[in-house]
Image (cartoon, rainbow, N blue to C red; front, top):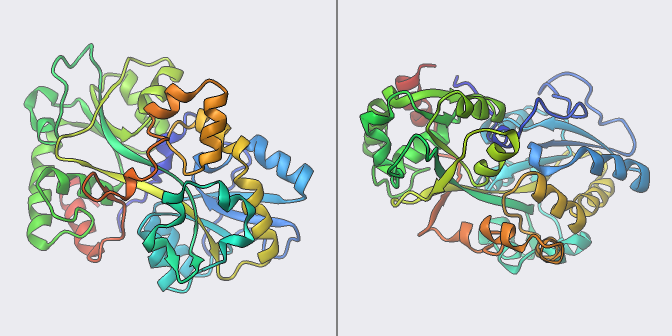
Amino acid sequence: MQEQVTRRRALQLGAGSAMAVYLAACGGDSGSDAGGRVVFKTWEDHYLPQQLDEMRRQDDISVKVSFADDNLTNFEQLKRGAPFDVVTADALWVPEFREAGLVEAFDPADVSTWKNLYPAARNVPFWTEGGLTTCFPHGWAPHLLYYNPAEVKTPPDSWEALLDPAYRGKIVLLKEPNDIMAKAGVATGAAKPFAMTDAEIERAKDYLIELKPNILKLAQSGTDELRAWSEGAAVMSAILGFDLRVKEAGGPEAKDVLPKEGTIAFADAEMIATDTHDRDLVDRFLVADFQPEWIAKRFLKYPHPHFDEKAYKLLVDQGHKELADRMLYNRPELPFDSDQVALVAPPPNQTAYTDAFNEVFGA
């Protein structure tokens, strides 16, 4: 089985919050019999420790965080009965969870913070079911190419440019097999990068075989990415905001470019697990979690766009409009424009994706 690496660890600058406890899928402290506690399977940018402290003090809601792996692993864990109350998933993975009966559809009117969302996020066809919603939209970001201008004089403006022998041993990718395969699909003209045909998968694999000598490493985490950048990587494929994380960490300058062939993007959301032990508590948690003041603070910590319009207005009032607009916070419709980005989705032929990746990089 492919090694699973969480995408959102690209957002993690340190080892992580001590409050975040990994729960084994079929073991460990489930938390399901604890009144007033929500078990939250999510990524690092979906909460702040100080916010969880405030929830406990002011709202009497205790939150136990389990760091999310990739979408497939989260899906399999929940299917095996992992005791999660709220689970985060990307874009077109949400319908997959719903069709499997793992998450509930709910009335958005039950969650007062729903009205704070941009209309573009409240009316996503694959996130709606009749008059109900299958998730609470959180945020999004495209994957861009970042380069060190001190090392790279001609910006790599395409995925094809990464094959240049001048980049030998200089490129870093985050080790997320499906995403790497999809990026190779974009590079080679696949019609649907997350649903490639056998022929398109072969072309994507050939691209990765040619690219492999240029890859310094497949990063296991955000810390690993930043370390590689400081130790000589010249080109990085990372989500929007990598340059700001590098700057905060004191690393070499990173400039971004959108590849001319297009790119992939995530748009994620919180889902309510069907087997949640306390639905009323979960509704209260979603209200507390999506307070605009905290969304604005999370944006400043992890700078990528959110779907909360009220938080955007707060950021503007606080003098952060230039940063927010640069991070595309004011473009909530963009992730749903299939001509611009390919949203992360479950490949219908997952085994073929896994096999192709492993044939290039090893199991």
